[in-house]
Amino acid sequence: MRQDHLISAGQLSRSDVETVLDRAAELDAALEDGDPSLRERHAGAVLALSFFEPSTRTKMSFDAAMKRLGGRVVDMGGVDSSSVKKGESLADTVRVLEGYADGLVLRHPREGAAAMAAEFVDIPVVNAGDGAGQHPSQTLLDLYTIRENAGLDDLTVGVVGDLKYGRTVHSLATALTEFDARMHFVSPESLQLPRSVRFDLHEAGAQLREHTELEPVLDQLDVLYVTRIQRERFPDENEYRKVAGRYRVDADSLNAAADDLTVMHPLPRVDEIAPEVDEYENAKYFEQAHNGVPVRMALLDLLLRNE
Picture 1: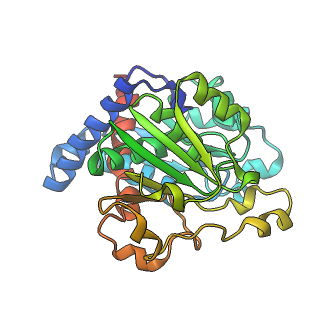
Picture 2: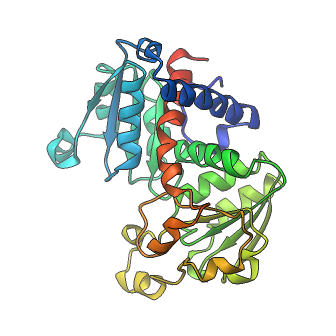
């Protein structure tokens, strides 16, 4: 995977994706075996974490990934405790962090922030979410989970929830155009895919259909990818309330699905998947979160080695 930075899923060819996923599988097996050589892989390397928005899974899994590779982590901490509070620009912040680390993971509320940051530094930058834009490392762990459970060819994927603001959706849909995948997007009309994303998918030859209800397509799906409504992205609280709770997957609704349907969610969930679904054999969202460690280990390994 010859990339200097990972900013968008659009950078990734099928070959790139398979390179990361294959490396992740190797590292996952090494973790299972307790292979001590893992900690020698990037001993002495330092990864900077710069998160301008809250994060649990992404931040902690990058931290764990780097440490399991033998490296160390420096964390900028919250915005309120950093010089950003004093008015420091993003360009200045990332140039300072470049002096402390060998790689940078950046989350920012402004779409395009990671691409801009990459222009100012010579160390690898990973986009950990830029507003409603992209979240490519999440996409890689999503694809790893899909490959492990349903395969990545002759695949029908349903994505339900907030398709307008959901950056995980935008990234995943982009990456799936590299595979033999049919995509069904289910959302309220007000939260459909942005026109720009839809245009790019059509240009890439995607097989996609849009719906407002899940039930008519549920029995066609190999993978159901559920997302929460992104309350924090809504400019108007009243608009959020109109769509909150619109879709909910529970045991009854899954009666209409194929027995081997893989149910996924990038987390955190609010009320869009009932807790009872956790007992469903093919509910894979916690496995999906776990996969963030080996996949991000693989990504960091490739970027820091410039392979």
